[in-house]
Image (cartoon, rainbow, N blue to C red; front, side):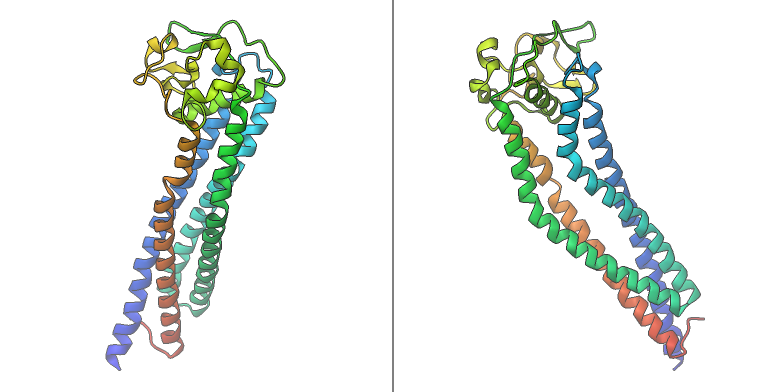
Length: 297
């Protein structure tokens, strides 16, 4: 009896301490990832500012902003979900530690029920990601590639700080301005060129004949994507494999951006679910022991 009085309740209590410390650590990681994703999305949207020289006149600013916002809306939703989940999980971890310390049956059952809800939500989110990810990849690739044939020429040079500037401003055409600016934004932000294969994907666009078949300057590698500072100043005149992304298609790079962190996300989600299940198990175990009159002294 003495062993159970001391060992069982104490084991459950300190196990809950440890599990909830792990939950809080994982929650901080989740919160950090959410903030990072949100900042990346904000960086992309803020790069639409006309002063960036992608669209100096600002004529297409509103239309392209809406297009980008529509495209990154799903990503921002994921970021918001991660931030919310991280903050919520930190609070749950604190609740779990307090419930174990107080040995309160009401707090323990509340904690366990909330963890069960979280596990069910994680399963639902995993299923939704598995179903929606192929659609997201297809929509990204198709939307970008459909704009390729409308890509138009932009005359550019560089300033004394090696930043790309448009001079004179592009002669705007209603059929080409939005696709052109949209593609330039993606090329500079992602670090790519063209659609699937590289700059040769522009062969059927107005740009190809006007430029003589050279890669767009927005395919150049940038030292600073926000200010369009060139990594190699010579790229303004001659694009090469070293100073540009001329043979790195944007469609594969965009897919890679979605896919590259998927195994890590799945691994972290599974790890969190396992920790949550352990928390549920030990919470119910301590609840049962307390109900039977056993406490950790």
